[in-house]
Length: 454
Ligand code: NAD
Image 1 (spheres, rainbow, N blue to C red):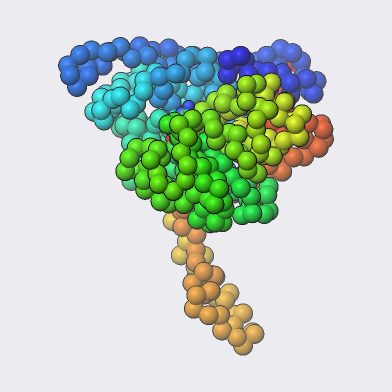
Image 2 (image 1 turned 180 degrees about the vertical axis):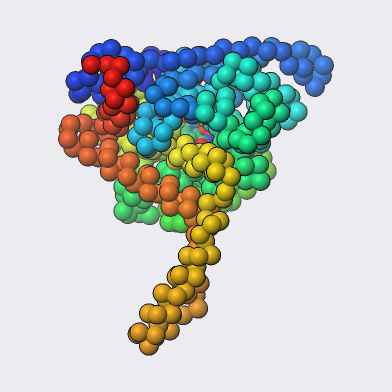
C-alpha cells in the first residue's frame, strides 16, 4: 500500500465512527489541487539537468494552505498528496486555521552544490508563483526532510523579487532564519513539540529508555531536550547509515558534534554501530521514536518491536496494518498527525509575526517587568521578607519572543492531546483513530456551516 492508501485507510477507519454524508467525507478526503512541474537547471559542470517537483494543496476549507517542502529522490506525486492530507488533519487537530499542503523536489540534496540547490529552489519557487501555488494568503511552504532555513530564505527572497508584495512577502514561507523574518524557536519546534507531548503524557519520562530513528532536524532536537533537560537515557539513535546502540545512554551533545564534523553518526566511538538503519526499531526500550521516513514499521517487522510505546515523530512511519497489529500486541501509538505538529504550530506563529511585523513580546515585555517588580515589592513589604536576587531575576522577567513561542507550543500540544484523549474515551478507540475523528469533525463543521452539504 502506498502512503496515500495508508492515510486514506486511517481516514476511512475514523470516518466509520461518524455519521456524516458520504459526499462530505469524500470532499474532506480528496486532494483539492495538484501542481506538477519540470524545469531545466544548469549544473556547475555546465551540463543541463531536468528536475521534477510537485505541490499538492489538499484542502481549501481554510486558507492559506500550509506544508513543508521535501527534497528526496524517492518522492513521488502520490506521496506528496498523502503528506498534504496529513497536514490538513494536523492543522485541524492543532486548531491552526490552515488547509494542508505539501511540496517536493525529486533530488538527493547531498549530490548538489549549494549554488545548484539555490538555482533549483529559486526556480521551483518561480514555478509555484506562476501557477498561484504560493503566497501569504494562498499557500505557505516551510521546511521538511532535506530542506532547511537557508532554503526557506531563498524562497522568501524569490517571492519578494517577483510578487510585488513588499508588505507581506515574508509571510509567503515559514522556517526562515531569524534575521530573514523567521521566529525564534522554529528550528527546534517539531522536536521540542514531541518532547513537550512526551513529558506531558509520561510524567516519569526521565526514567524511560528511548530509541530514536533519525538524527536530523526532528530527531536531533528531540534527543537534545531529552538529554539536556531530563538526562533521559537514549539507548539507540539511527541515521540513514545505521544504528548506534549504547545501553548506558548516548551522549547526544557529543554525537551531534561528531555528526556535524563527519556528516553521519557512523564511526562515533561510544557504543556499537550496526550498518542497518532499521535495527533501532527492534531495540529493547520503553519508547521508540521513528523520526526519519515513512512506512518503516510494517508487517515485516511489527512483531519484532519491543518498545511499549511508539511515538510517531516522522510522518506516516507505521503502515495501516502494522498500526493495528501494534495495538493488538498491547502497544500504545502516539500518532504522527498530533505528535509532530509542533513545527506547523510554530510556523503559524511565524506567519502571524510576519503579517503583524512585530516581534512577540516587544510591546509588553517592559510593562510586564515593571508590573512584576511592583507586585514583588508589595509582597516583600507585606511579608517583611526579601526575595533573593536569583529568584527576583526570574520572577520579574517579562516574556521574550522565544518564551512566548515555547509557551504557545506547550499549550497547543497539551490542549490537542487532551482533546484526542477525550475522543478516544468517547469512541473507545486508539489515539490515532481518535486524532483522525477530531480532524474530520472540525473540517466537516466548516463545510456544514457553509451550507454546502445537508
Ligand atoms: P531531516 O532531513 O532533517 O533528517 C532526516 C533524518 O533521517 C536524518 O538523520 C537521516 O539520516 C535519517 N534518515 C533518512 N533516511 C533514512 C532511512 N532510510 N532510515 C533511517 N534513517 C533515515 O528530516 P526532518 O526534518 O528531521 O524530518 C524527519 C521526519 O519528520 C519526516 O517524516 C518529516 O516529514 C517529519 N516532520 C518534519 C518536520 C520539520 O519541521 N522538519 C515537521 C513535521 C514532520
